[in-house]
Image (cartoon, rainbow, N blue to C red; front, side, top):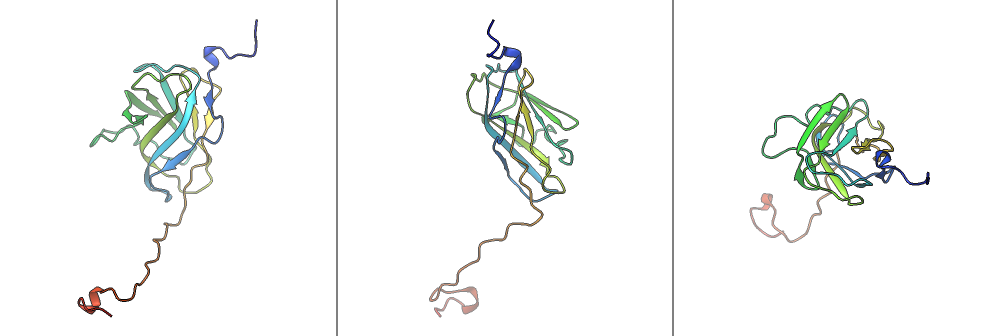
Length: 168
């Protein structure tokens, strides 16, 4: 008996830490689409059956993730609308819409998440159908300051609205 290989019930999410996380909006308390991944599962995931779960830290409002689909905005797995999705407390469950072979990169988009009110709340736990061991994302990258637009350079010799089209 070899004790060094996990059974299917012990599937792994890889990487176990530092799964990339991108937000469409990084300002605190704002609605955002969270893009989690790429990560992999050591399981073959089956369309319309296998599920991925995302456990968010306290302070993140995920209640809108599975709200009424409007203009095609719904959780997506590798660019394809999820077969189903649900929210229970801080856990979002997404049923994969296509077969995904073990070891294949997976990226999941979770729309309509409301960012936490403060930075430093930690990351999201990512799991597959089989349960632990799990993976975690990088910390949720929110800020309380809006990004400043890049300064505009003034270029001499180009007309501006206050010169009525005449060159300076």
